[in-house]
Length: 77
Image (cartoon, rainbow, N blue to C red; front, side, top):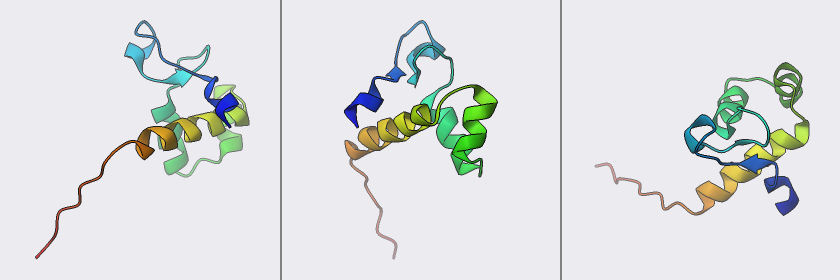
């Protein structure tokens, strides 16, 4: 799985340093938004000329980043 992460790049000169699919300007965030909107991975891959492994890499990257965050939930009365 770590091999997939090599597909993700971050360069301050490309998309202001946001994580992107290597060699593209397609951000991890954009892929997540497209998936959340209901697009299928196959549609995204075709429409943006990336591979299904690129989409898996974006999901893995997001999971790794979120796994390091602490979430604070407010108690409601």
